[in-house]
Length: 409
Image (cartoon, rainbow, N blue to C red; front, side, top):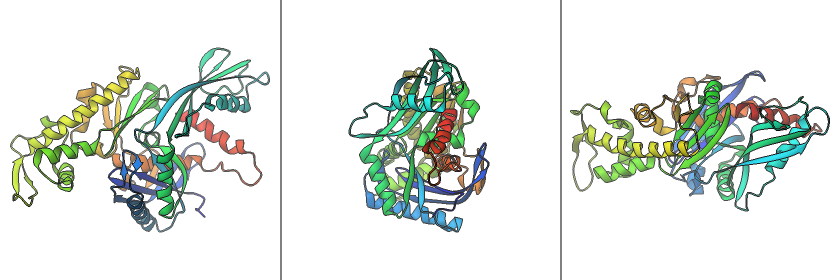
């Protein structure tokens, strides 16, 4: 059995698997997470959020989780697991219901939400999240929580997030083969936002951009709600492939060179800087200007960020994001990426460093690449304390969770 205040989180990326074990802190109003253990492992089993090799994915999960358990000094049986990729779909639906009595009750809200959720997603998809955007009472809109209000007609606008059945099933199968059970799957941009984005930023408008290895995820928040989700099938692996082609290196050497000497913004590099390139069987060690490496990275990242900007524009939020952009994921650790994004977006930009409501081994996770696993841990701690015991009504559990989702997203 999982100790009552513990939560474990797992982020399966295209190049690395990250695990975090945390303990719930704080109270029901302001829950937090004390980081107890951290683990990570390289993997080649996942591509753009989809498991391509179950054995390899299982191996990386075992290694990352065992490292986290060893650091924490305890074992955990269940995990919250992140999911993302271009197989994720979003849809806006509406629901309408009559009010049962003079005042709107929680039961009325659950009923109208069920109406909004009752749409066909097709045989290939399953519902991951349902996030109310706003409620209307007798055509008066802009309402977050209508409980207690007087009216005859209740409406809701709902954002449904769905994922491919096979993608979710293979992810669960990999986790189970590693010896763990998935408590819940959570969309990665939502999880990352819990660790890196403030309520004020969500209110005045911001874009969370997760620069992963296999794909780039975009989540737009405005007026405190999630308004847009999309995924772009270009990310860090494309940068690495460009280095392979441009400098004639292996994939592994190109990845190391990118991490050790790379940058995303050419103006930051001294034109006189020289770097050593790893030797290959056909040629010995070579020297090139660092400016050449950075130029390759700059060009590809500029293209990817341009695609992200197009997504924001198509969603109708260009010029409406006063808080700007928050960068997470491994790509956000590239030197100069903030400066390049500011130039492309012409808006405020910052790194998304996990730091909200966390204590313990903060130094181990204070990096954009830990935004998702730390956010998953925070997600889990927020759901604690309401789990029903034998015979209790289901609404006692799901009601508080539902209200929290409305408030947060």
